Image 1: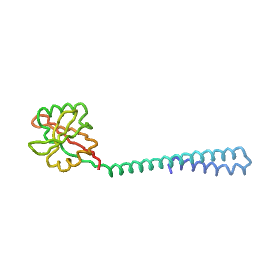
Image 2: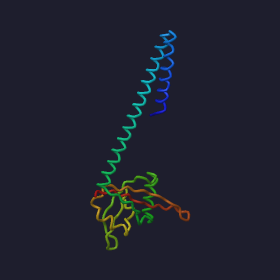
Image 3: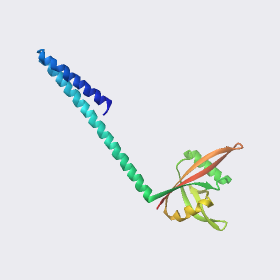
Image 4: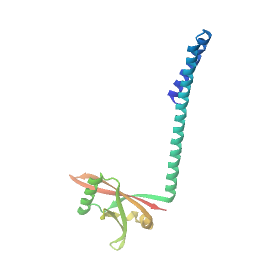
Length: 178
């Protein structure tokens, strides 16, 4: 129960208690006014309390729906967070710098494409139709089997300074259907 509802109920009780002696003193008008004020205060307190309970129930229901939605998503989808390799080439650094500047490095749409590198399986990472790097060789056993079921690739670009040179790196958040 909210504090404001409790205060209103207490005030209603006080007005009701104070109106009783008015009747015994013969002041019926003041007694009726006290009872009416007590009823109004009690009604307002009840309405506030009911509204607060309803809001709490709606919030709990909304939270339960959100948790159910998340559980359903987790049951049907998997998520991998991986670093992107091969981003230090000059042309890729320029692409990453532009992407970083345009989006503050967050939420960049990407794609994956199976390929070969030096005769071995590889997976290219693209952003804005430009190759920005590859999935690391150590992460390929996780990525290659799910490549056909990838639903979303979101890239995050970060940077650091090394000997006065700004260097950009990238990570990929891959969402796939199980």
